Amino acid sequence: MQPVSVVVMGVSGCGKSTVGRLLAQACGFPYLEGDDLHSPENVERMRSGIALTDAQRQGWLQRIAERLAQAQAQSSGLVVACSALKRAYRDVLRSGAPDLRFVYLHGDHALLQQRSSQRIGHFMPSSLLDSQLATLEPPDADENAVSVDVAPPPDEVMRSALAQLQTASAVRGGPESDTSPPRRVTFTKTVLFTDTDGRARFRDEAIDLAQGTPESMLSVVFASGGYQLRHSPVGFRSQFHCTGTPQWVFILSGQMEIGLQGGVSRVFTAGQHFYSTDQLPHGARFDAHVHGHWSRQLGAEPLVTLFVRD
Image (tube, rainbow, N blue to C red):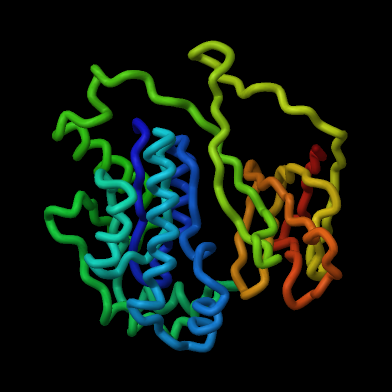
């Protein structure tokens, strides 16, 4: 697909994050986990089983809209996982990207309840699912949305969403038409960083692949201070810690989960990466209740990672 912003939406347990990451990878777009932009106060409310009010969601939606506006200004494309339950919420998101597309994931209540209750390391309790379903306003016909049932495996859900997005664009004479200019090619750099409040958070950035040939696009050459290979056995888990030297972390085999303060976590599998620059703020003393992140191995396969230092 040509650069376009897409929000993968739906209630808790529908698979927004999984399908969103797959869709971003298939399109070559950056990916943004909307939950990472919630304030700590909102995270604690939801962790306690308290549904957010519209006023409490407003700042969160505005932050996502700002990221959508940045992507549109850079013509980089962006896939965002965000519940976007009401039309009013989606209107806030559209304020950042008027041509925003939506992928509405829906499913049977029992299936959603089962998946929501089986999630590990997420702050949203399954008890809030009924509240979300009561709030949900499915997209109207004029909202530039496609609808996908989540009963099949995630890769099938993603392919169905992508096919519908491409078909709809082609019918409109949109960016997939043969007369469109070549799209800008980017690599999605997932960054683990220290925010202004001292807490670790994730964001996604785009690295242009503007060198080389059209058949093999390359980035500029980045300096490196060396690399290390690490083997983490089954059951490995670290304490909260900060990164000493900024470094790329590439997952060669197995699965690695990174957890942040407040309960948000992300899982990286073989072939994925993140860039870790979550360092202790200058002059601060490490506080295990505020600073840093933790990591652990998941699944039955040992975790093998490659660290490339700046």
